[in-house]
Image: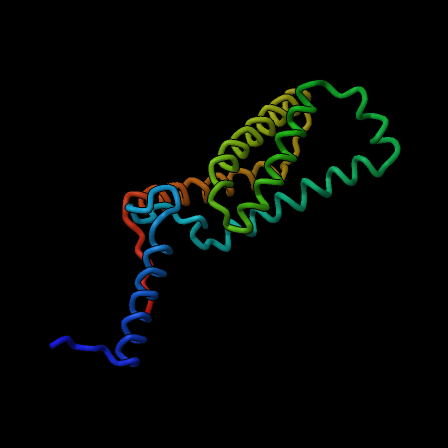
Length: 172
């Protein structure tokens, strides 16, 4: 004799099959449906890193607004060297990438790391030249770049350690 499933058993079986299929699509990546997801799209939570990135972003954007808003400073922009413009572009790119750090986007980790190194080198070289001329100023920007670099270094180690493990989404 053939056993017939009741409507309740059919719906329970269908519900279990749908839940299983949904779990498989969230665990597997879209490019390789047979392997589990190994790279999370977001960075681990770090409030200190986010605050430093926000300070760098605000100070960079404020500096640009201040330089373009004041007439004497705006006229001085035409006589700046090519190296100064490269420094400004790197700083502006770092400010944009820092917004990605604040949003905990994984794509921003490596560019922020290298752009903070470049910005730190630019500021150290400028500080050395100013020190040779007899000027001594303690700047906030190199300190912020060094703090961000330190936090990005620890984040890179955390992410690379987690990258070797398989991330499995559990549902309750």
